[in-house]
Image (cartoon, rainbow, N blue to C red; front, side, top):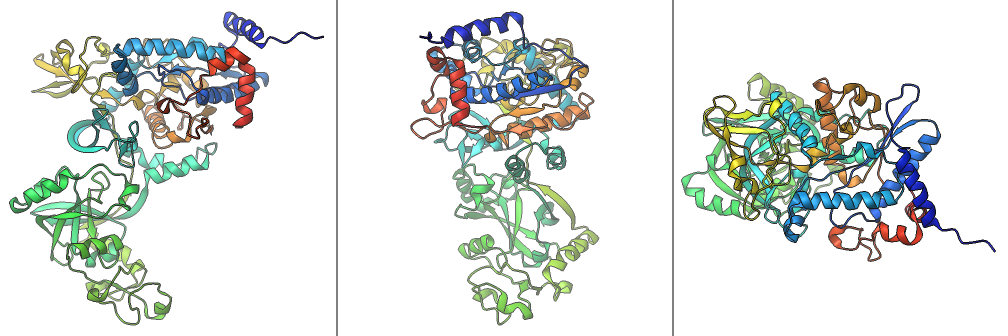
Length: 623
């Protein structure tokens, strides 16, 4: 009779041997072909790992072991995305300091991860909450500041009252906070720091070097970046030029009103005294919406009291504030042609705004036009019950009358350029990345505010600007409660000044961590370029598709910026990307700490062993 195999004893024996012999630690080796495999590093919560993490790491481990057996020099590191709002909120909830909470969480994570027997090189751990790491977040910020890519401006921003901080556009889902799905995001006008991701929009929209990335991810990014070709048209409003972007200059003669976003920072400049109270009340009722949600909204607006001068007809057209225009898209103002756009048609009917037909059906195609309006005669605005949105012939369009509308797009644009009232342009839906956060547990922004010198960067030799330990949590920004941190001298003039108290978005920390793994103990520079060039780009990157329009865009942006300042010799962060999907709990919901339905992998490992757990995971959730 054979004795029963004790898998627990076996795994403990071999995991100890691996640890003592440092078998998975690697260095550069020109005699071997390298392979860099990386799973997206975790946020170390107090509750520790769940089965979704275990699946992710198991997939990476299988790939790493395969490549080791094939003779590759395999880099397989692990680290911790340990700054951010969740740790701060969790620490406050249990009455401890975020640093202590985070350090304890990381210790717990390491115990759990080591129990799984993963092939990690534990000598390369990076932890984003250490000054040794976020020093280089600040260094990159200063480089962006030098190049004009980090800047501060007042704008309408998304504000989560639950988080008590601002959110990037990518962090607002269906008008709700990405962390608190039952909390409406509000709009506030605040001075905030941004990274100019739009300077890289064209390159981010080029996916030619991402053949190993899933088509879905590329499609999601392409839609998010939202490249479109069109025309900028200049309207005069109260003696000031306002630019409007349109993809339909062929309808320009049909413009009967303009709409400015209710969230536009310059809205009140257009509001007359008579309309001020009504507009202010309307603005108060607005909340943050995404571009996808706008189509579902009931279109509402209010007259500002101002009129624009039409660039071609010199007619006066009213300017409305509306809830269906995005402040950060284009100029935040749109032209409205109610006879040839259904949204504009509904708005015009609702607010009794005149209609003007400028496209009518072609005679030979009248029978094929699918429209409820009577196509057997020229369209009459007063008889229309919906917008005419198909192609046709221009009418009421001065010298362009009689031209096919598709031909008129280029001709009218050329005419606008000729009279210096517009130009052909390319627009992007992508907006600049809002990185300011009014919370404590993030990378301090290395800027000093001086009343004489303005925004002064901290000297590189003074980095890192460290988070002070002593702060008070409650209402407002915790860093403001530490006067020793806030009050300082201006590096330029020596006068009294104050530190920037906003911290950086946690996605900043994860936008270059893959590079730091190659040289994690370097205190003199962000990384050695020989080391980063040897190991990068990542050969296999593993993580969820939910990161498509946040982390995976930001890490591409950082890669391109660091390349442009001579730090990298490649264009994209990863050759191949693998999305592992999500595990669901027995209640049918995705397994998530926030839902309280997680299963601790360590419980299974201690009962059955790591190998049975790993085998089970890849059998029920096959990669």
